Image 1 (cartoon, rainbow, N blue to C red):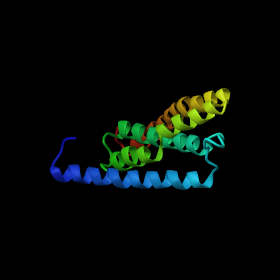
Image 2: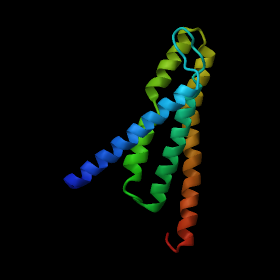
Image 3: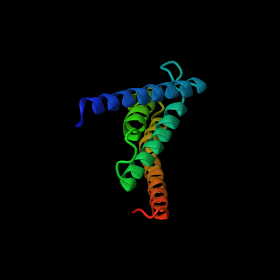
Image 4: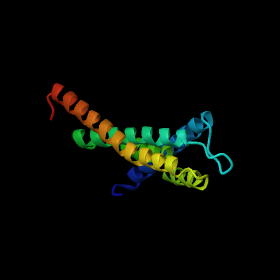
Length: 145
């Protein structure tokens, strides 16, 4: 990362704050829903929901930044890298898939992986498209490209 020492420090603090909030949000949502375990391999609804929502947020941020340029300097480190990075989790998807496979639920495991990855990409694409459309429309209304 380029920039002055002060800019790098601010970026790091924004990233850390976003990551802490994203991790806390993931934990709180996970507490509201049943969690799979080796003894009880339930369908991992909370992780799937969290990853789909996080993909949507990230798609929205990336598309808006592309249309508007860099935008607000805090958005990417705080929301994009920090919050979404702390909120979403690839490792939990893999762990929960392994639990389903060990429980002999290969079909459910395949559905879970497909919805998690393909669904996440589709949600990011849809929210990104909507975000870009909205950013262009708002920019056109203000006389800017």
